[in-house]
Amino acid sequence: MKQLNGQSLPKARKNDLVTRQIPGELLVYDLKRHKAYCLNDTAAAVWKGCDGKRTVSELAFKLQQDQKSPVDEKIVWLALDQLEKSYLLQTKAARPIGLPALSRRGLIRAGIITAIALPLVTMITTPTAAQAGSPITLNTCTGRHNNDPGGCGGNPCSDAAGNCTPNGNSCKCQ
Amino acid sequence: MRDGLLIAKALRRGWRQPFEPSELSLDRIGSITPILISSGAAGLVWRRIELLNSPRGQPNLPLQEAHRSHQIHAAVHELEVTDIFTRARAYQIEPILFKGWALARLYPDVGLRPYGDIDLWVRPEELEKLYRALPSGDEYSYCVEPHVSFYPQYERSFDDVMSASQLIPLNGIRVRVPCDEDHLRFICLHFLYHGAWRPLWLCDIALMVESASSEFDWDRCLSGNPKHSDWIACVIGLAHQLLGADVTGTPVEKRARNLPGWLAPAVLKQWGDGSGMSFAENLSFSFPRRLLKPAALMRALREHWRNPIQASVEMNAWFNESPRSPLQFGSAFLRIPEFSRFFGQEIRRT
Image (cartoon, rainbow over all chains, first blue to last red; front, side, top):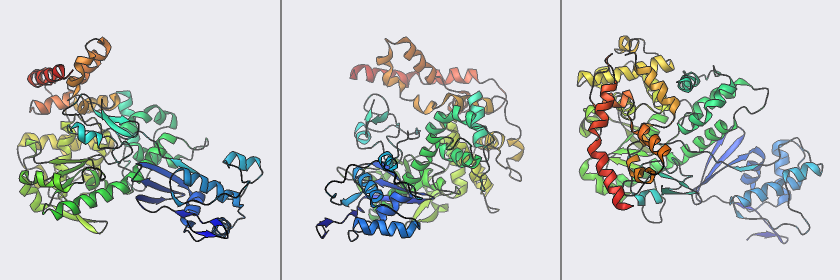
């Protein structure tokens, strides 16, 4: 883990991720965990800035320059917390002693209101469209993941009862 | 049928750019949102209601979320298609990609059309090799559906389709897809075979018809058994009548304006019912479990009952003004042996 004056430097995860930039949001798909995330502009800017070389202060400064608006370091920490929970960081930043867990509501209560949007990382959870597929085997079904494109597919199972449908994040003939 | 009509209105000309604001109110769209999402039409409708500038803020979060999901999944799907073609070619196999990305690429924006399985057509002798080429075990799995033949009414051999196929660039490789004429014929038959249950499929057809260039060879698309050519003309007619597809100047224009009276209502009823016939095929598997639940059993039996479209196709009937109920009974009768076989298998299994 890279450190600068005892402070570890956050680094964005790049492997096994697929991204798509859309207006105002960055969409990220985790090929390992089969989960999709939506990062708002602020969270995306922090994530993209996490190159393993910048400190949190430098990330806040960069965000301030990008957004042309003052940025409190706590905003960067809030983004990092969310990115870490979503497994989007390869190296996380060591939290300064005494820095409490942050939340969007907490920052607003603490009076940290900025011209930029507070960072937000949300998991994209939506029922996938039902498919009109041909029968598939039980093995094929269980090899699928609900968050894959096409989800479980809804195909009829040829050697088990039912259709290939979600069972949590995995798929099951039921 | 009311919901079916709403779905048709919500999707009317929804594939065209510039996008027009939805003709339907947000409340009306809200009432059909679950069907729009489950049928894959959420992205198309979201792009139109986005333009409504609702005073109440975000007007329909489930549709927006579905659109986001389609957009990121499209990026993943494109990588998968690229990888599959690379793997297949490493085994000296040249598949042809149908539907999915081959159609979605025609839409004006990413995420308007979701993807499902990756449908590949290969020569029968290449099927085993294709399975070997695909990732297995702990590797990432793909929803690939290989085909070695299609509906007999397609009346096209693999070599026919391959000879006119096109290579489209994607992520640094070239993906083989059928020529537009062969593809349009295929998706029309696919729509009929699955009982027309998914409105998005009719949008695909409308989009293909409207994006056909002046060189589009209608003879190639329609040639074959006149009955099946008429089926295809009727499907294009549905795209015209229900979704507003422009068929002016096409050889099917006259037929498109003059469809049998039962056809459009059957489609609208199917759309309003939500997912349909595609799921009926395997319901016999679950019959033993439903025997003691009369309500569930009745529902399963109803789902097994073919709608007039699928019954007509299964009975290889002309799309004319003759009543469809004899065909529906005939279709049910024809499937008794298959049903008995599945039922027996399931009884033995349970």
